[in-house]
Image 1: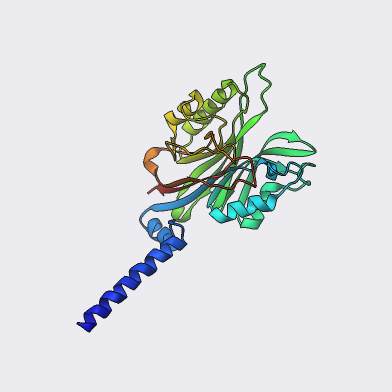
Image 2: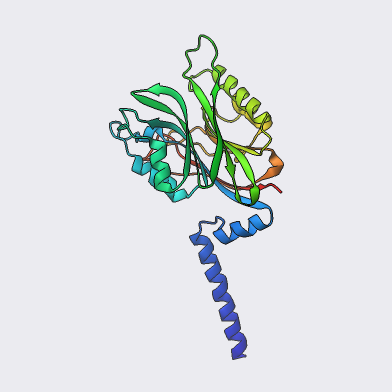
Length: 282
C-alpha cells in the first residue's frame, strides 16, 4: 500500500514538473520539439512582424532608443523577423545601420530593402533570420500617377532550413495615404510576385489597411493570414486598428500554432505581431 502511494506521488511530481517546464517555455515549441518535428518533415517557425518607427518611441519624440527595440525582439525570440520603417545611416537616427545593429545583437542574418533616400541615408524594410538567407531581392511596388505616394517595396529572401527545406520570406510596408488606391496596386503586385514563386512563402509587415477592406480582401484571396479576428496593433496605448499582419501560401504547407499581438507600448508606435507556424514540406 505504501509502495503504491509512493508511485502515485512520484507520478504527480513528474506531471507538475512537465507542466512547469511548459509554462517556462511560454507554451512554445522547445528545441527538442523542433528536432522531433524536423524528423517528421515539419519545422516550427517563430515569425515576427514589427514596424519599429526608426526606433523612435512615440512618448519620446526627440530620442532614438534602438536598445528598446532589441529588448522587445529578444523577448519574443523569433526565428524570422520582418521589420518596417528602418533607418540606415540617417542623421536623425545617429548614422547607424539599424537592421545590421539589431541583427548583430541577436545573432541573425539580415537583408535590408531600401525604399527611399532620407536624411543623409536610406529608409526601408528588413528581413532578419536565424537561418541562412540567399536570393535576396527588392521589388519596387507601384503608385498611381498623381497620388504623390511615397515609394514602397517588398524585400524577399530565400530561407534555407535543415534537411534541404526552404521557403521565401518577405517584408513590406504599404502606402499610408487615406485612400486605398496605392495600397490596392501594391497588394496586387505582391500577389503577382508571390504567384510566380515556386517555394512556400510568408509575407509580413505593415499593410496600412484593416480587415474587410479591398486591400486585405485581395491579400486573403491568395494568402492565409495567421489571424481571423485580429487584435489591433495601433495606436499602442489604446489600440483600435489591426494593420500589421503575417500571411502565408499555400495553405496546405503551413499550420498555425500561435498568433499574438505583443503588448509593448514604449518602443514604437506599432505593437509587434508574433506567430508560430509549422512548415510541412516533404
